[in-house]
Structure formats: structure tokens, C-alpha cells
Image (cartoon, rainbow, N blue to C red; front, side, top):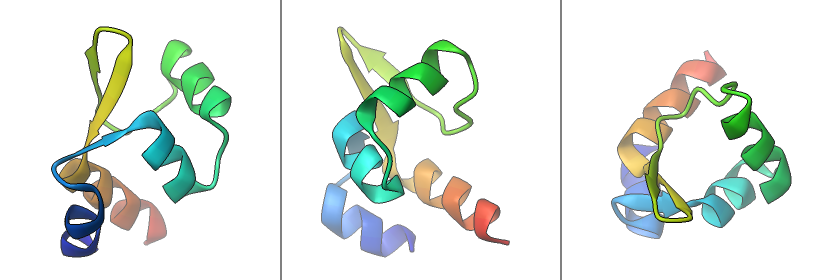
Length: 65
């Protein structure tokens, strides 16, 4: 899964890409971030949230098991 996501998104994913991957709305992800409920590691650069693709893939694999 990691190689597939790395090929598609590169080393970092933005909020829209993660929302598309999880099939959620961006506003839902924003709410989870602000409420501290999002378990996926993220970095804030200015107004933009970025998600390391490898850690996101690891998180998704752990949730599938």
C-alpha cells in the first residue's frame, strides 16, 4: 500500500488528497484536526495541512486489521 500511495501522491499529501482517499469531506477532516481526533500524523505549513504519505499508509493498514 505504501508504494502505491507514494507513487500516486509523493512524499506528502494535502488535505484534499487525503479527503479523496478516505472518501470524506474536507470540512470533516478539518473538524477532526481541530478537535484533536485525527490520529493521522500531520504538519501545518501556513494555512495548509500536509500528511506524510508513508505514515498515512501505515495508519490505514493498521485500521484495516
